[in-house]
Length: 279
Image 1 (cartoon, rainbow, N blue to C red):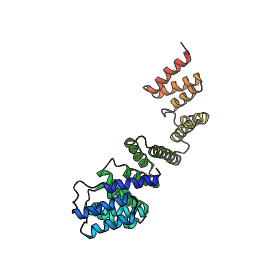
Image 2: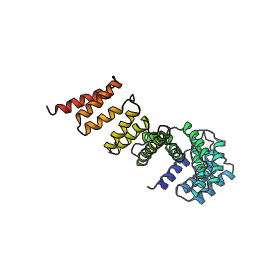
Image 3: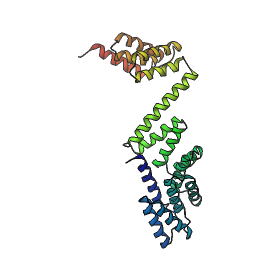
Image 4: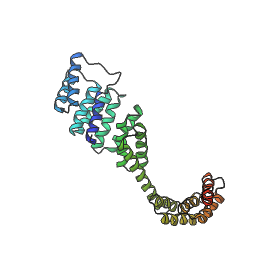
């Protein structure tokens, strides 16, 4: 299923989500409303609009009817009209989650990002486990370069649906952008200094560039000889490259800085086992 059809399917679900305390429609209007829902599900937007307008004209001015009118306009791309209908649905029933989620999407489509974020955050207070609201909020975080916020939204989405590839991809991209943003901040605040060099060392190591990683960690240690974990990282690289003496030296330096370091002690035991060879 394409992303566009996925979003449409989600909006149809919201169309069918009627608040438990909603005002009942008279039987005649309920039948017309049901016709509108069937038309909406079939993608017959003109028929759906006519049915919902007829319900409203005959006195069926209730929140979920306006919510569905908002969906019709949203699917047409008429987002200004959708906003008006969805705001009316919220006015009639402030605790109704669906129109807040849809309103966020239409406001975002209109470029009203701050308003969209506010509505989606309100929706999540009412329904914290609603995936569409979190996905829309994640997109807003991406648009505004709020990568920490994007990580949080995709993290929750992954918990809600671990097997959804889009959420896995989104979380990975958000972590990557957050890492890039952090490095840029460090380059501004700490260019050439210990923390920046330490971060660069980890970045090079992830990329498989062990020699560059070692050089960066060494610069970090020179900039701040008291910085923990730098020597431990160098020791790990030396072990991977089977340079036992270099690894031992760095482990000893780490333990002088942090005598209680469980990581350094575990690495020391591993080094001893490697040096001893097969039993």
